[in-house]
Every structure is written in C-alpha cells, then in structure tokens.
Image (cartoon, rainbow, N blue to C red; front, side, top):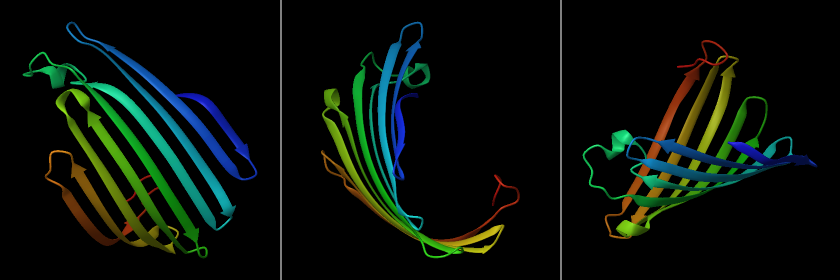
Length: 169
C-alpha cells in the first residue's frame, strides 16, 4: 500500500491508503485497485473506537493458477468492507470489545452479488503476563442475490499462552 494521508489530531488517527497492482503473465494481463480509509479515536485512555472502509476492484480469475481449466471469460470483482469496533478497558486485567462489519461483493458480468453482516463480542482477562483467558461470541449472516443465505453463530472460550512476545498457543 502507498500512504496517501496519515495524520493525528487530538487523540484521533486518520489513514488513507491506496494500492495498485499489475500482474503480467503470458496470456493474462491483470490489474487490481484498492483504497483503504481508517479512523481511530480514543474517547479516553479506556475507550477506543475504530472505523475502517476498504474498497477493492480486481479481475477474476486473478492469476495463472485460477485461470487453469477455466474458459476465456474474465469478470470484474468489486468488494466493499465497512468495519466498526469499540473497545473498553475496564482495568489492567479486563477488557472487552464489540465489532460490526458489512461486506458487499459484486461480480456484475455473472450477475452475482452477496452481502454479509457480522457482529462480535469478546471479553479478555489477563491472568498473568503470559496467559490471557477469553470468551467470545460471533454471529454472521450472508445473503446471496440468487438465494441460499447462510447464518452462523460461534461461541468460543479458551486461553492464549505466550511462549515469546510474538509466539503463542
């Protein structure tokens, strides 16, 4: 990504990134574009709000491996992703978060379109400097223009055991 704008003002962080990629294979010339906007606000040292928006355009199939076995048809692929998150730090050991995302994917030539909504909740407890206990809930709904909607719900509980600063179980 190339940073177009990056700034801070009164505890707020703004970023705008863009990307352009060009792949050249013998029979395939492919380009893709991506632009990302992100905003982060600290209402206090205990309350954090994040907003991000990502728009991307690419062609499908994207490369040689995906082209193998397919007919000579290329399709535009447009994707929009909006993500919101709010994090609350209760004390040094306990924090929680709520996230929401909306994704829209369109393949105009094929007449395909899908929209998905996702909502997540999590609670983390720092048991020790190397162990974090957590519980989370996530629900999502994917709606296809042609039908065949999908809904999922996931409840998880567990722990993270850090072996080093970057490696954990």
